[in-house]
Length: 119
Image 1 (cartoon, rainbow, N blue to C red):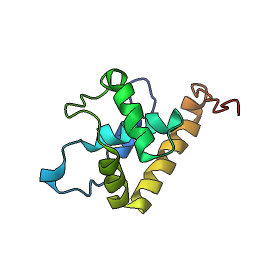
Image 2 (cartoon, one colour; image 1 turned 180 degrees about the vertical axis):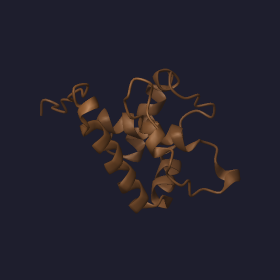
Image 3 (cartoon, rainbow, N blue to C red; image 1 turned 60 degrees about the vertical axis):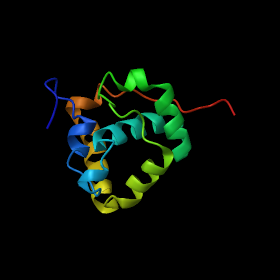
Image 4 (cartoon, rainbow, N blue to C red; image 1 turned 90 degrees about the vertical axis):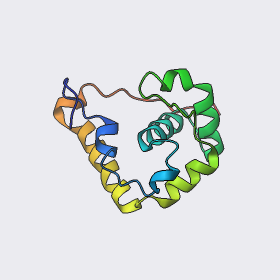
């Protein structure tokens, strides 16, 4: 799936990921976990704790895209989720997402992210 403007959407691609959790334990929807993690890591998060702290600080921003009705998942929830997913499927979807950004239609729209921290 792609957006109307031709860009491949992160959540469309990763929406294909099998959710390993049992239904009654899904307090935080998978798309919310994935978007939170992507944004936090891009912004420098290096641990599950960092991702949780980022999410709590940026909840208003994240709610522009998804509801986060149950708030931000804790570091233990994040850890358990990522330990349970099919890493082979995740890797395949990640490669698909990156390749979509390398396509000629999207390449001109890529924004460079400077991760230099000044250290």
